[in-house]
Amino acid sequence: MAKSSQPLSGRRIAVTRAREQASELSGKLVALGADVIELPLIHVSKEIDKQTLADCLLELGGYDWVVFTSANGVRFFFDEFFRLFDDIRSLGLLRIACIGEATAAAVTGLHLKVECQPKVATGEALADALIETGSLDSARVLVITGNLNRDTLVKKLEEARAIVDRLQVYKTERAEVAGLPVAADFRAKGADAILFASSSAVFSYAAQLSSIQPLAGAQRPLMGSIGPQTSEALKQSGLEVDFTAKEPGLDELVAALVKRLSNNR
Image 1: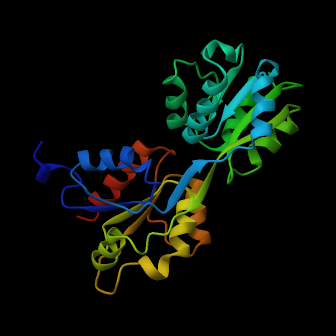
Image 2 (image 1 turned 90 degrees about the vertical axis):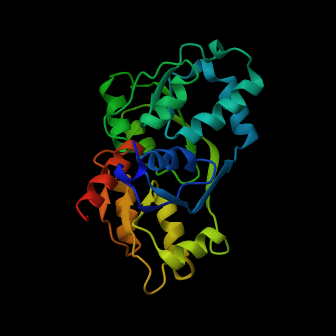
């Protein structure tokens, strides 16, 4: 298809995911004809307490469920798992639950089965889906998290009488972008839209707004959110929510973007 006939042809779209994760979303946008501006407002890196990790890995056979709340959690957990074990069967009879499509894809990419995944990719929905399995009373559950995960999931599981351990395997931090050439380009020209796939990216943008927001005369970008938690972060930061994905997910975010911009032509 010629670029000029593609739905995002001639559109400048800013992506705010971590540098190491931006390519998936950027690729989807480029495939639709967009000019993508990558503003890596957050940085994700491994951060694990070695003793807690050792305790959890050595007791894996005692858990009934392992719960992943992000693809980052899957990646960093299994990096450590394969340092200790050389056979995926060392997971034993563990059942796996995931919060959304990207997380589930990271698990199935290891040829593992996801036995619980909610229709809506939120911690609350994942807890409800696990409760609906009827398997949580006195069950041992290992929740793999990052440093910014909310307590809602763990609290709901504990209220359902599960015995929950939490293992943090990564941290998300604000990344300063004001000095990057791409930020200067964003300030000078603006964009048709800026996409947020996490609350942490929103808060990083808000904290740096005075140094990266488009200048007078530049195009003001529409603010796009991947889901309700990210939309709430935008509102808390005093920013507009111009469109939100119908369901949390990158494909849904891109679809919402295309629909919103098509209404502006």
